Length: 191
Image 1 (cartoon, rainbow, N blue to C red):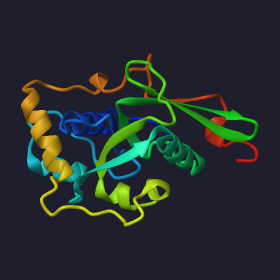
Image 2 (cartoon, helix red, strand yellow; image 1 turned 90 degrees about the vertical axis):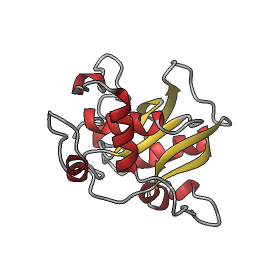
Image 3 (tube, rainbow, N blue to C red; image 1 turned 180 degrees about the vertical axis):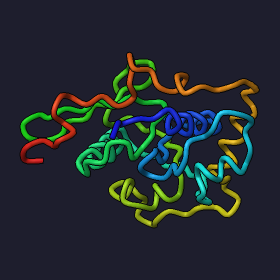
Image 4 (cartoon, helix red, strand yellow; image 1 turned 120 degrees about the vertical axis):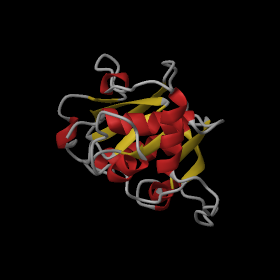
């Protein structure tokens, strides 16, 4: 599968755009949770349920650039491109010395420093699952009952735009959010 999809990127952009003070957003993508395409036409909550039928709540995590690099490298090591959608960063991954080397860049093009503190908007299922296991707080993840549902967050963001959206608004082939060096998708020898 491809590493990004317009719908996954739309969800990630909407989450980041709806979460003041965050640096980036990571959500489920086609493989990881989006169950249908969002059809052309007026937006309805029913259509959003078809796409994302889960009651996942929005959470924030504080991680370092090194932590986030490890999260992304672990996901690539699982050989599941297309599981995560990202907004606010770009990933470049290559094989170096038999291992996956990941570099993260902000949308501005500035490389993310390993010591840099980042606020990530995501959903509770990702934060509590394997994706963020290596960086989860020692006391576990606490999700407030009043934390917004991702589906409702997406709906508000889309309605607030007041304009039609199209797939090509969320994928730019000239500047992909996920960049893999040749051969990386089949794994690095020794990885």
